[in-house]
Image (cartoon, rainbow, N blue to C red; front, top):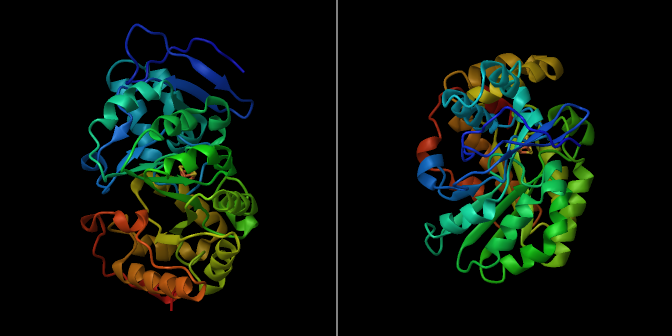
Length: 351
Ligand code: SF4
């Protein structure tokens, strides 16, 4: 582990204080300290109907379909524009392909509790705060830096709010004590994220995420501890994970693990995702490439026909496995964000 000075000043760092590389791993991941003045993103900034909080920028799990890569690019570009990065540093922190930096240059939001304290004053009673919308709050870095745990410790003093947490990591079970305290005076939904029960397929699509069985065991632990936890199946990948034969075992596994709810949503192919996902699609599912190119040609969201068909399929599976139709975070995207699209090609994979 290194602890040396780095000639980098992330945009949110107060000037005059030298930036620090917190850790460097042999496989090339670097962790850099970031001290933001604000940690809660308001709904007006994200287009979601909830506040969001991400303890890290970048994510080592490196899922090929991850839409959050733009957040990393934004932080790095802002630092460069402000003259806080040289061109060489900028190139390193963007990476050769842009998407690499998201997985290998992780910003750790240190000392977040002070900023959170201030931000919480802006959140009205009854509002929802979701942790982990743009990076995994329990990615490997959390084991060492414990930023998410510090955030939860502060949030346990809140009352009358609604919280969501999204993660692929079994590490969340470490914080069962805080989650139980959090839901005593607030609403809480913990979403364990899993798009497939097939470990080999998961490894193709998600470079370094925990295996499906480990996530399901974590879900069981959360539920057994009394935490309101369920599964989020997002994104559902057209032609890859959307068949009943694929989804049914996942719903069965969620039921077996005691999930209280299950939510699902189709892939959104934002510009920042295409560079990473489409080459991988070409490598493993070349026959699907033309269909994706047509379906996602004019917008990031899946075609409306496809989304509707998928919703019906999910509903049927929910009923079959005894899950109630609960409102979840996937349902809280603003309607205006879903594009209208006449491309029906993908519908054939659903019916
Ligand atoms: S775990 Fe979530 S944030 Fe991390 S790479 Fe995967 S989808 Fe992106």
